[in-house]
Length: 253
Length: 237
Image 1: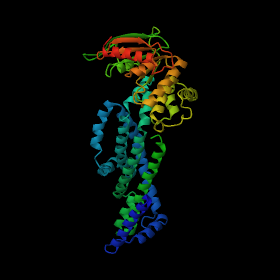
Image 2: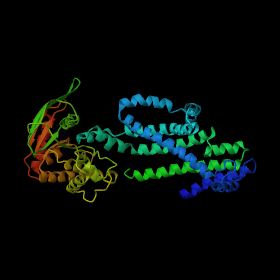
Image 3: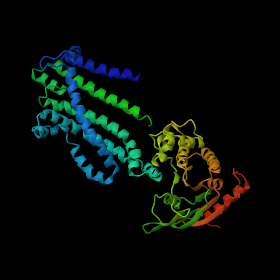
Image 4: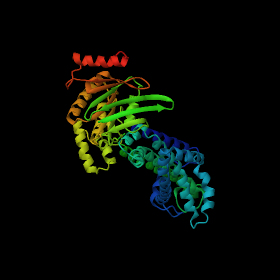
């Protein structure tokens, strides 16, 4: 069977299983959810007065801003510590200690920190995304910068390259695959973190917030599942688009 | 004239002991010796990659520019063939246009016209090594240093590249120091073969190869020179 046929078959299996389960447990069948999903994609859902697209856009904006800040720090830091062994020793142990802390563990602290600001919830959520996106990105970039072939660096030296040339013409280009996969993975973790962060505070909009409110107003399962599906589709698309960008930029491989 | 007089220790271990010889400008000199005899170290010293004791003088002063060809091609995989050739020129501060036209000519010289925009992974081992040659040629070095550049190629490719290198050298006539462990290769390419002993390296032989180019590997004169070098290497002089 063709690859695409098998992929389709996988989805059909899940939907069939869902349909069968809906006969026995309090779960709306797939087609009702599909109708609800399409409806609220465009028509505002009455409790919050926004449609699903608007919630998705708010979540995406938070993720993009938090991730961009994270990448602006993580990419240069990853290159520098991957290149310089002393700075690597200085930073990496510290990074390894902070890395296993789930971004969500920072939420209460973030709300306290940012409570002095006019808009603490927004800042705290961007911060959570930052924490989620930063670590995978910095470690991926570091690994590639570190793996720069010593032979290539030596070749550059023989041709008269100084530290700057070596960094710009050898180490950074060599790290580009690491930067791209770091951005992709970082964005993925950032996306997961924001949805959870939105559930914990009244942010007024966002997919996580939407799901939480739909639960609190009385377990509106169709809306909840619609929100979950939106999260899945967006996460998948972000990953897929970035994978394509990677393949395009790394034609030399 | 290039005058070399170097010693090198790693801690208390002597690797090169007063290796002393001089090379005329435009001369093609091969350095042979058993593996681990410090041949590569000697080239790396001349290229400025390693510390040493002693003196290296070119035209009475220091060496301004060397072109190095390594055993591995050491091409940047994210650059096309022509961009790889441009590498040294970019570092020297040439503008892109000029670097590109010089590099184009260098690629033509090594027989790679039409491959300018290929990435290294699209080229064969022999073609990649040609790009590495072009990269060294493009910067117009005063001295070429070659460290077993054909060692990882198959026999047929290796012979073809030896012949082409010989031709290019006849056209351009530059000073070449070529390290190899193949006696045949040395006799085929060189004006002079310098034989190094095992560690610590010393010059144990200096043979002038008086054969017209292109050389015939199957001639008795060729065989005679091979044997001469072989005997020196074996310590039977």
